[in-house]
Amino acid sequence: MNLEQFKICVLPLREKLFNYSRKMTEETSDAEDIVQEAFLKLWRIREKLDEYHSIDALATEIVKNLCIDRWKSPSRNTVELDEIKAHCGWDNPERTLVENDQVQLIGKIIETLPPLQQSIIRMKDVEGYETDEIAGITGCDIQAVRMNLSRARKKVREVFLQLTNERKEKKDENRRFA
Amino acid sequence: MKTRIRFLLLLLILAGCFPLLCQAQSGLRIASIFERYGKQKGVAMVELSTEMLETYGMDKYKSITIKDAHRALPEIRQSLEVDKRGAKKIKEIIQGGQLVSGYYQLPSRKEDQNRFILFKLSKKGSATLVYIEGELESDDLITMLFMKKD
Amino acid sequence: MKIDDLLNKYFDGETSCEEEEWIRNYFLNKEIPEYLLCYKPMFVYFDNEIKTKKNKKRIFPRRKTLIYSLSGIAACAIIAVSISTFFHLSDNTSKRNYVVINGKCYTDEETVRAYAKASFHEVATSKDEVFNELFND
Image 1 (cartoon, rainbow over the protein chains, first blue to last red):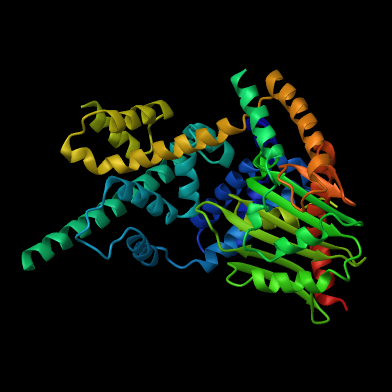
Image 2: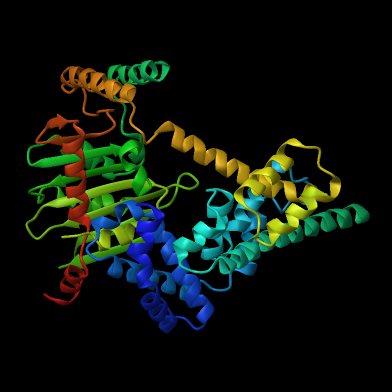
């Protein structure tokens, strides 16, 4: 199934899905993110869509599950940062992070991003989709995709720098008192 | 030409080697169900590998359907009791105190790899056990299961 | 400097895939000034992910070539011969796509796929079925 066929098949459901999502979330922006994420999920299984009774029902089910996931997951910031630190041998500040650790750290940080931002950053930076293609799949305008992409990338940069600088400061501090 | 020779060679080795225990289920008790009942009468056992499963995000798919399962049931249920320990996600339906349907997401052994066991006892008394390994996420699998055409 | 402009554009989400490739190559192959070193891990990460993806696709290319088809036919012949030799010797089989029905092994794709779909269908359930199972006795 190519993008045009996908658009014909799936995009007409957008308004209905948005309204459904809006009823279950607190913010309009959350509802919009959920609908975009749902469309990206549908895009990933586009070759199997004809195996389902009703794409409408399938899409609704996906949106519902995403809403439920959103209720369940608390604010992701602090908890995941601690997990990231544990994973990368943070407990030993004397150990210099080799490049490989830093690369892995990037991966871990991306996993802490909101699901839509994760999907968009992967589609753009790994799978090589252009922004207008992602906009086509999600049924939103290019600026919205650019904004999400920008937020995601800036967040990764910010957290990465924060963690690596924090570590450097602690190391320097330890040295001073050694 | 080179690819063809390699492919044939690979298959010769696979076919010629002494068969190994199915590695996907190493350490799982349900492996014994596949071993014991897989070649019996009234039983259908399927195994698929990556080539046929790519579009589904799976690397391994193994299933066994036992038509008249009353003899195998205690063993199946016991194996699931053991294998589900430490599971990330469990969904079960119990009727009359006995398990009739189960969905289990096992702890991952590798990064980006999820493992699942599915079980269903039909009203006609046939039992189906499915083992899946792959990149697909739990909610993707649940969606596939829940929305299948009749 | 080109890299500075591109990086700003990148973090604003405005780069094309071609520009992003240029940035990745820059961080992987060029001598990087110290003030930009902190960005390297990010682009190395994406480059690794892209390579991993490409390797996965290469192992099982979707396009069937004549060579693959011929190899497939030859392979099935080899498997068919091996089945009869090994089936009685051991309990386990190392073939990769197969279905065993009433003790007999089949490897043709259509049959295997049909039985796989059927087994998946067995464990799948509809909402009505779940509702009935939960609330009817």
